[in-house]
Image (tube, rainbow, N blue to C red; front, side, top):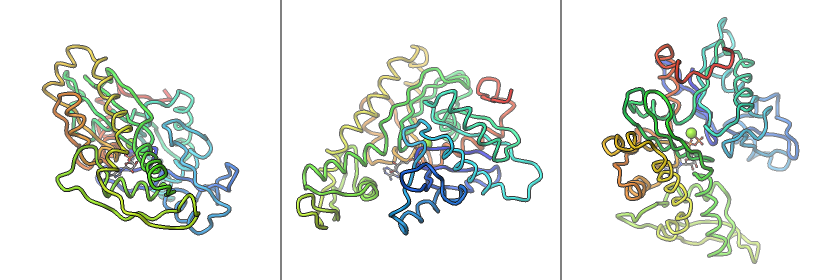
Length: 336
Ligand SMILES: Nc1ncnc2c1ncn2[C@@H]1O[C@H](COP(=O)(O)OP(=O)(O)O)[C@@H](O)[C@H]1O
Ligand SMILES: [Mg+2]
């Protein structure tokens, strides 16, 4: 099985079956502690569901939120739960597992992910870096002697990489991605309307009316929140123009990470990119008009991968099929 261990969502893809699991990378813990609820069963959708019902004593943790592992035990509980859920209980042989990990995580964190997978019953475990999996999932010719460029915008991190001959030539991981867009919208609502809104409302605003460049048809949306002065609930109407303005900073942060990576590329690889362009993946790349912002900033043809949210997971499953062919350069087999 191939696993996309994302900062927002974890997806599992199985050869011949496609995406078999797609859940939030969330674990419910007893509030104020790092104690995972119900022996590690309160993970993913179940963690989210429990939250709404017992808000007092339970809090949600996203153990990979910033692209680094904040708590090893919680990450292990999460990964183990997902692997067991997909693998079932009756199997004699554990599965071979390819896990894509944010490229910013340390050797110690990699080791922790590896051990979690082994403990959850994996027969063999391979780790690959997220931009590599994204490139494979997007169908880029990453193993060929020509440059491919991928920009994977997730929740916590944006990963930018230029690849050639099945190897990463230049890459950068920045902590500007979907979460920052949500935060920018929350700040805008506070500053402009004295209104507090929740993270989920901010995300909904982003998805419904958010954009990075002017829309053919600008829109409005009714938003509910809490007035910061009276403390009471109220509603207001916001426009797509003001949300675009609020998103300017994170959008620029992403765009700058892309141009910086290009500036560091070898001239020959940069030359290839004039032909090959840039591929965008990850949920954050779905923000309207973002591809055209990147296209303008770089002057390179910029496209959106097919189904950007499942791109990395599909890439890990494809990698598993080509293990023998690609592993010499990409393998990160901790047991070897
Ligand atoms: N249509 C959309 N427009 C803008 N952002 C989106 C859209 N759909 C999902 N997202 C954002 O994408 C991010 C999650 O993307 P994902 O690739 O799953 O992240 P990760 O790999 O870090 O788990 C979240 O910030 C989410 O709000
Ligand atoms: Mg991702």
